[in-house]
Image 1: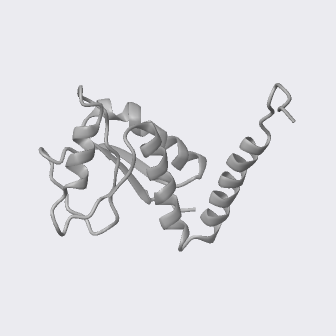
Image 2: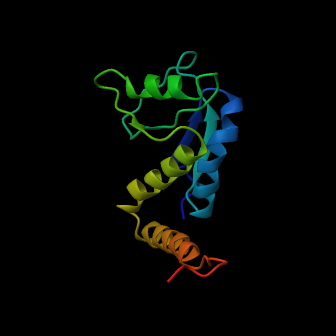
Length: 134
């Protein structure tokens, strides 16, 4: 397996890692080589030709709505796949990155399928403590 990062988890500041750690955890669980870096769009603008997935972070009193709106309003020519605010969005960003990579990586496809089947089984294994009315 390659140790070259296949996914970059990029954040505007170190404090964003609390939210984006949810993405890192899933990438690690799926054994996807990755890196996490602070790269400010304002202080270190970066241009790329690979898919970009945006996760709004709730860092102000607007609870992430300002981040969400700034990501979805990218100008023509700068596409960003935008996900939910906070940790759920970070986790889904990692899963979407895994799905993109799995289109060309059969082993990753199998790991992703197993991960998803395990989540399904967790739901099916849940028990209700009381009898349902019949």
